[in-house]
Figure 1 (cartoon, one colour):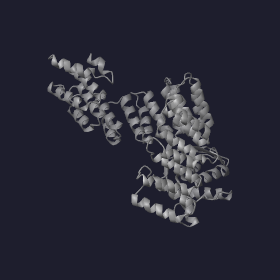
Figure 2 (cartoon, one colour):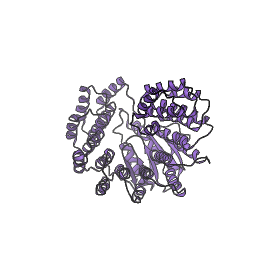
Figure 3 (cartoon, one colour):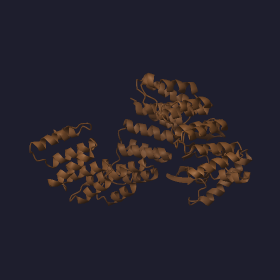
Figure 4 (cartoon, one colour):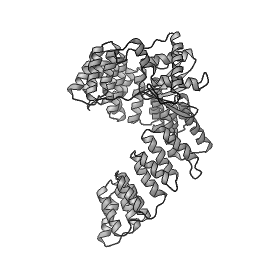
Amino acid sequence: MIRAYSKLHNCQEPIILFGRMLALGLDPDKYTFTFVITSCSHQLSLVYGEMVHSMAVKNGFESDLYVGNVLISMYSVFVKLEDAHKVFDQMSDRDVSSWTSLLCGYAKHGEMGRACEIFDKMPLRNNVSWTVMISGFVGVGRYIEALSYFSDMLCDDEVQANEAVLVCALSACAHLGALDQGNWIHGYIGKSRISVSSNISTALIDMYAKCGKINCAAQVFNGISRKDIHNFTSMISGLSIHGRGNDALCVFYQMLVENVKPNEITFLGVLNGCSHSGLVDEGSSIFYNMESLWGVVPKIEHYGCYIDLLGRAGYLERAFKIVKSMPMDPDIVIWRSLLNGCRIHRDANLAECIVNHIGELNSRSCDGGEVLLSNLYASLGRWEGVVEVRKLMGERRNESNPGCSWIEVGGVVHEFRVADTLHPQIAEIRDNLNEILKKASLRGYVAKTMQVSFDLSEEEKEQAVAWHSEKLAVAFAMMSTLPGTAIRIVKNLRTCEDCHLALKAISKVFGREIIVRDRSRFHTFKEGDCSCNDYW
């Protein structure tokens, strides 16, 4: 009975039955302890779990394999990793589950250094242990290492890739824009005759969309006979980041026709699509009817998308009023969306109003707002404002993330940072970039330096924007690939106006298609134009 009830996550019966058993004077065995401790993990009851652990020790089961395994798992759930390790060390007999349970504890909580140490010492590995490592690296954003471990796993004849590890590997490819590796995994799934579940289909749609191949994502989507909410949501989000808001709405309406109920994430994708395509009326209608028609209460993320939609379209005062009347406190995304709207429409007065309002609230939810305001002042040539804001930022010691871009060449992902000096070919890359920009300037490209937040000479400003990470990535790709090859880049920040202009010019001069995925959307540069139509 205890075993049967222990399979239910929200059930206290195992603990109640265990108490009745003890009251009757019956002695628990190792199986009783195993199932009761498992139930303590499900009930999130650490105190009771520790009591049962103590009883197991008194009854001589402290070194039992099964009891030890569930104790390691229980302590890992409660992030008591040192206690889990103590149990592991005291076990006289260990199996692959013992090692994997301890490994999972460290990986699940982001301690990948310790996880690697345990993994390297494992005498035997199985599918679960490999999956734990790969998903752990994905969870902490170390995607290159995740793919490296996935490659090593495929070389292990004792294991075979399962659904969970394939989804993790495809997720890593999606984040890195590693199309070649993502294509290879798709082919591997077909050749290995692995059943394509909803999770794998969704991961494939997401991978192709985030690698810039939205048509391939659509092919996977259209090939699904019975689409579920995850398939629909992934396709909507993919179309949205490509700026195809009308197509995203079409898929949304198809979803409703097929009686698939949208969820919170679906609406984030739809509202993002409206924002990137300027569909104010459509986005407003969906936002204000989310709760009444579909039973989804707007959360702060939905407000952020809607504020972004209004800000991009120039409805700044309306957006500011909504922010002030929101049922929850605005976060950094809300303020950045609003200030970004001010930057696009060059409304320094409203931007000042917003920053002052934040100050009155004594809010630390917009630590990046000063950067946007400083850039706006710089674009208007108001250097006294730049100095004042930068001084305030210095007092608060704010640090912004440096620009970083990733590009896959020959199946290897290369990383570039702004003004990079670490890449082994950086000197050659810089020389090549200078030549590229010279040829682009002969065809009309002029560096746009308005947002360089320092009162420098024009030449110094041009040098400051020349070494942005996506430009370095493009220069590397052009010297490492054949003429005419498409270039795909993933960037962690929003593409600046100068890089946007430069990449349009480069695509025309050199006849290259350049696909850039920045923090919020895709830009496909081709023959001097961009798919965003300069609305981003």
